[in-house]
Image (tube, rainbow, N blue to C red):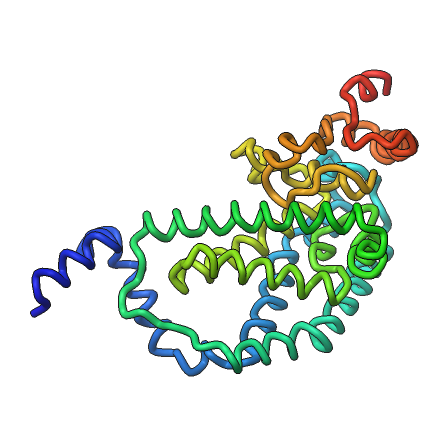
Length: 307
């Protein structure tokens, strides 16, 4: 039987062990039993790659269905329908670009990191409240760090050319392009995510959920669809796919990956009318690209009224 002091400490830090932590504790105990597998040097890169492909697959189905069900095109943000063959070719080409970069850069780097780190597997799982709080803290911190890094890559010419330009080869984004970037940028994003989890000091279970949610949000931001059930429709604090698609069209503004507040505060928010982008497609975005020459980081609402 545990001493009373230890029981109080456990209750204070993790919540009621007989209440909101039972399911998480069972899951965590199962994961701890596979500790040797979880510490494999090749697991993080392989897991990240396959999870990314898995989360992108529903949007590939959307692309294919759009060739037979035109109503799906209504949810596209800024491009018209493509022949199925051309669409599949874009996905295949992007897949191989990402695969090669993971194989030659991400896999060796993550294997090296795994070999030198000393992972901790605490006995107790976090409570649901602690889990949610730590994941939200990681997302907010990552969003802030990424905003600074992304803004810097656009403002420093050599950084843009050497690191970020490869990602902007996709003017029209689709789900798989979330990780279609240079090896340097992919590594930097991994570092930012690991740094966020380290600064927050979260439980390994919280960190795993943060990485999973981080991957999904990146996929959703690049999917090219403004779906009714998208996260930014449910939580307006998120920018979503229209928010990030605007960045890929004008190359400025909307630097934050997920939330809107940093761009609001720093004056780099693009006031995008999603319904106008869907209605006018590429024509609306081409007008916005012409306005880019004026040097403004913000797109005025009145421009859409003229459209």
